[in-house]
Every structure is written in C-alpha cells, then in structure tokens.
Image 1 (tube, helix red, strand yellow):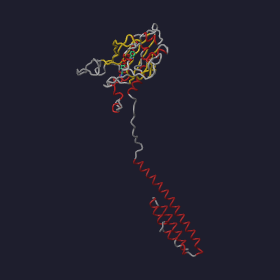
Image 2 (cartoon, helix red, strand yellow; image 1 turned 90 degrees about the vertical axis):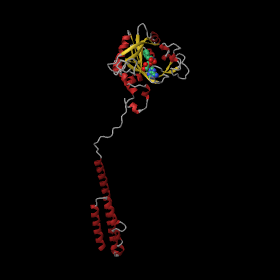
Image 3 (cartoon, rainbow, N blue to C red; image 1 turned 120 degrees about the vertical axis):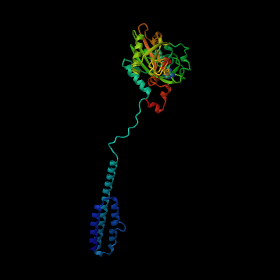
Image 4 (cartoon, helix red, strand yellow; image 1 turned 135 degrees about the vertical axis):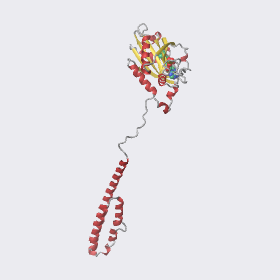
Length: 355
Ligand code: FA5
C-alpha cells in the first residue's frame, strides 16, 4: 500500500505544478519530470512487479489512472498556455503598430490630356445646344471628298496625304479610307435630314504627316450648324464663345480668308497667343517664338458650300449653315504651352504627370 500512497501524492503534486505552470516550456519540463522515460511516475511503475500479487491489479489500475490524469492535465494546460502566448504576441504587435495611422495612399492616375480636352470641348459646346455625334472612322471616298465638293485631282485625295484601305472600291462611294478629317460627318449628319442641326463631331483622323505640329493619328472636332438664315456672325460668335470658354476670357479670335472646297467663304481661325498676349513680342522685347506675330492658328471654318448642301439633300435656297474643324491635340498643346505636338502621345510618365 506504500506504492498506492506514493502514486496518489505524485498525482496531487503533478497536477498542482501543472496548474501553476505559465509557459509551454515549463509544461514540457513537467512532462519529462513525471511521465518522461526517467520521470518519477515511470520509475514508480517499474516498482509494480514488486507489489504482492493480490494487490497488483488494483495498484496497476490506479497507476494507469494517475498517468491518464497527468497526461490530460498536461495537454489542456499546454493548449491554454499556447493560446495565451499567441494573444500576448498579438497584443505586443498591436502596441508596436499604430493602427490609427492612415495607410500609404496608392498613386492615382488621371485622364489623358487628349481625353480631358475632348470632355471639356463637349461640355463647352453642350451649353449652347450642340449634340456630340460619332461617324465611321473608316469611310468611303464619297463622304470624305466627293460629296464635300473636292475635285477628282485634289491633292488631299492623293496617296501621300490620305491612308487608303486595300479593298475593292464601292460602285457608288469609291475607295475606302481612314477619315482624313471630320468633315465627312457633315454629309452623314445632313443626310439624316433632321433640321435644324447643331452637330459636334469628335473623332480620330489620319494623315501621312509627322513633325512638331503634326501627328499621323489625331482628333478633330467639327461643328456644323444648319438652319434658316445662318450667317458668318453666328460662326464668329460661336468661335468667340468657344475660345473664351476653353482658353480664357482674355483671348481674342480672328478669321482670315482661306480656301476649303466645302465652304464658301472659307476662313482660317487664329487666336491671340497666350505667351505674348497677342503682341508678338515678350515683355523683354524678344520676339515670341510660340506664335506668328501674336497669333496662333487653330483650324478651319466657313459657310457650308451650296453644292455640299445639295449633295446632302438640303435645299440651299431655304437653308444655310456654317462649319468649323479644329485639331483636339492642337488646342490642347496651345492651351498647355507645349512646343512639340508629338509629346502628347509620349509614354513618359514624367511628361504626362504634369497635366
Ligand atoms: C480641315 O481638316 C478641314 N476639314 C477643317 C474645316 C472644317 C474647314 C469645316 C472648314 C469647315 P485642316 O487640314 O486645316 O482643315 O485641319 C484642321 C485642323 O486640324 C488644323 O488646323 C490642326 O489643328 C489639325 N490638324 C491637321 N492635321 C493635323 C496633324 N497631322 N496632326 C495634328 N493636328 C492636325
């Protein structure tokens, strides 16, 4: 019965030490101390064969119970101390990190300057009743040239100016091409025969050109107004309104006689230069390099030619109209004071980030 007492006292001792243990390491120690290969319980179990035979079964059972109690107590305590340790680690981590501090803001992009210009132009014209439309980017010669009163031998119809598509020409509309200007939209709009017209056609246009003021793919925005009694005064008023809204109230507009096949009379439209304010010379007396004598050219305009009205099914005796066509990239470069229009399609972030 000596062994029985020893077993019970070992159990009480072990359980109380296990309950007091604070860390998983202490528990590992206790495991070795009691149930390890040379632990005190293991040693006691080795005494079993010495117990008188009639008591051996009972003592054997007790020894097994003591072992199970110690092992289960160890397991539960190990689980708890491990959880506790994880919670403590998390707490320390939280104390090290200021969770209220704002995170790093990811860099935000912005719209491309050409898209911004298109949106602004659309908005400006919408205030005076112009509706934005879109017409095909791949067009027939008839819409781009023939109906616009271009003679067959006009240089713009040459391979060197316009990109033609390798397709068999249409029996009525002729060869297929990439729109060299947005004026083809005038014909398509008038053929819809919904009067009066206040059209704003913004689209991609293509020409075989590349230098400081020309790119091969660019955008134009074309206005077309057709109604009864439309005059040059309406054209000039609309141009002034656009220029002041887009460039600033201090900018002036001028129209110069010019020639386009599809307008009569025709004009080139200039605005006063933003760098020298229309003077042609900078405050230090130096000649302004951005403009020609104080003026910058923006695009073309004019009164719709009677032949074009007729070709589009509009009665020239009843209706008259004006049209204008400007380059989006051109107005955007002038507004932002850029010297080379090709930069606008540069992929350099340092350049694009300035907008
Ligand atoms: C025309 O394209 C006429 N269709 C404009 C027009 C419309 C006149 C309606 C009358 C009535 P022009 O070829 O001048 O005209 O081009 C107009 C504008 O488009 C130019 O002033 C310029 O701003 C822009 N542009 C022309 N070619 C290029 C190019 N390669 N790269 C960038 N912008 C260009």
